[in-house]
Length: 50
Image (cartoon, rainbow, N blue to C red; front, side, top):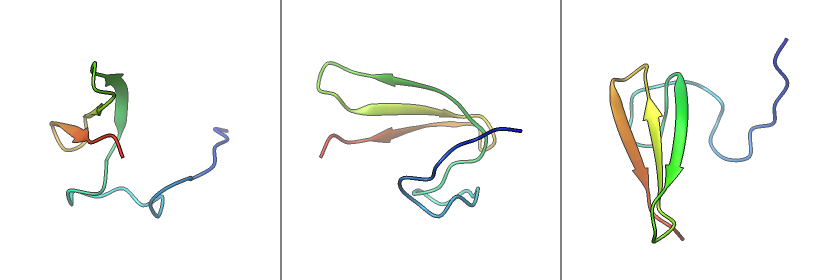
């Protein structure tokens, strides 16, 4: 079984701008913004560097 720890969010998949559903990959750009391939929602989510 998969083991993991939720470090942000509530661990519940969804389709709101702050939720992901079946994320499959991440990449960072030169400004260290994070892009997540959200396959369950058919989108790429961008998270700005804080």
